[in-house]
Image 1 (tube, rainbow, N blue to C red):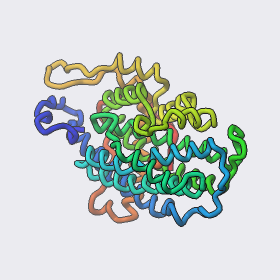
Image 2: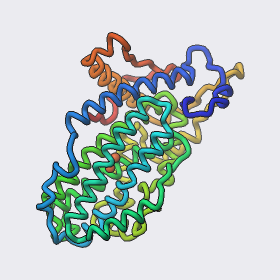
Image 3: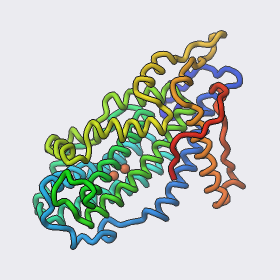
Image 4: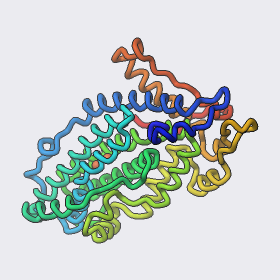
Length: 365
Ligand SMILES: [Fe+2]
Ligand SMILES: [Fe+2]
């Protein structure tokens, strides 16, 4: 965390009371976990999701008579994903001092770039938009630049958790239409489109999991700040680039009517899912916990002690998930041989009060 502060702010960090981890130590632990997670992620991505936007799909077989609603949806998906270079450069720049996160963002950007190219292919091969129309649309989109929605790394990290889950949900719901599992749009079945939507949705799930793991690490070592970031992010959540895409309102109305994405989907299938994975019971509980839990000066006046913030989320389950992440990374690193040269260990946060062993929240891969 201190790595994202300007150097002079580091001097103002209060001395750490005996027995607790200093912020520098917490940052070192988080950074080491990010690095291990990024290496694990890359190996898995190359092994299981190494697809190509041109060659992995039978574009020549895409239908030429897809309904209007599907065309509006595909065009909107393309518009959002084609800002991949902006997303990547802004995020890389923000986390450039973190090896794990900055290298991950490059890998992530290379995956998002494939999504943009795939949706562009879908629009083009539908034969309902000419290459000239697409070129002009792209030029119009690229005349505007996307910027980070929040000024600091922790808020942007939390934002990506919700954004990746929302994106995954959009694609899964399009897949339902394309496979005939939803009839909210008539005549929408197309096997090529279904495969594209499913392939990209799997990537988005992997992105969600990566950012979720990172957020849990912050939540475990910096609960107050992380819960505040969650509260702030959900208070003003919107899909990325929604303010840059010229025909956004038509797109939003279309995906809502088509059962692909709307406010109810966000509440039920994005916010509640992410909350469950972060050990947060509800938005109301989160608000109450933040209000009640403040860091206060300790008795000696030379440090801060956290108050009841630990009661406002299921930190036992978060700790269980953080430990499981460590085991996953340890297994990976053992396979490579890193354990002999740079062993990776879980270090408990001594601020957390003793608790009952917990089964943990939902796990991922
Ligand atoms: Fe994407
Ligand atoms: Fe993504």
